[in-house]
Length: 218
Length: 218
Image (tube, rainbow over all chains, first blue to last red; front, side, top):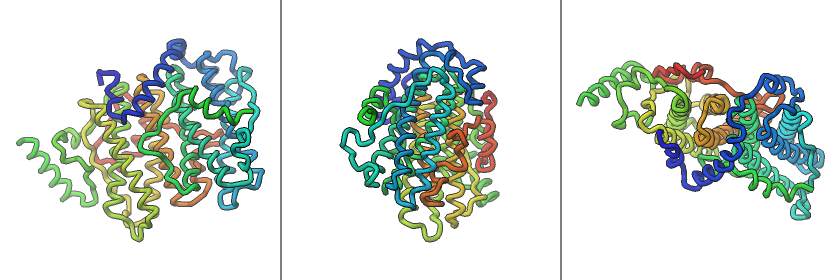
């Protein structure tokens, strides 16, 4: 416990590497935010969804805008999917519920960021034609749904360290993170898979997440 | 050996006094001391938070070990496969935290599942759902109490697995339902619960015979 890395030694090597990799990222940014504690207005903004972006520390603003971009992508995906008729009736409740959560996440993050919130990106869920039948073939839709949900889980996980200085924002991010994990598990289940890939979920760096999401941004 | 004697005596008392009490696997390992029977104080700061997680993972691991040792009537292959994987994950989480804590780890806790009917699928899955959702809320609420970013990353790699479990259990109870993606636990803002240790320990207390105290955790 005295050794900073003792906890990592107990995890599988690949995960430890990912965490250490993420930590370099985190430390660079976290250094800038060091000492910043959440202020009362942020707590109010989180409670009421009122705008407050102007006073957010930059590292938190960047992190939340990154999260918001992913939530825009997910919300648009389920908006189109739920309207398309691609989803068999027995699964519609699941995807309507998921879509409702993603839309709620967009609103929440927009509310916290206020004027600093990024605009919704243009989207192309065919990824330039690679998934041309995404809203006609349920298997394709399911593949992308799982991709987005697992990506969301890994993305929030990778950013948690950026929010260590701000208890309220970190907690909200964690509260979104676990909802994405519930989604991912059920979507995998619909695809006749286990809801997980092992006992420990892996984080992804911002760069890796953006690389994975970019084909779907128009 | 003094240890051996007290262990034997304590187990005698336990087994003669309360037939329904299930000993946690590993309780007979050499590191188990009399302290666990007297009570476990989680400790301060990050160690306290990790011990708190360790206590919850002990509870979950013991539960699923029992579930698979005394399977409910007509356990289907699908139930068995999913519950076995979840059991193995909880054991991996428990052992990971114990190793990470090293000499600071609390002892093995004794659990009390007398309220669970292990012969009943509904009782087992209902209890599993409670434990998984409690675990999610516990990790979500504890993130803000962790100061070391490595420990936060480790907790993050566990909490989303708990959320994936929660969805899988809810799906076993009610396939392809809104509950399987969080209804009942996710609020109107799309947020999962976040609970502080005092609330979680109170909820878990009926299932843990060893008195667990957290003098410095909120």
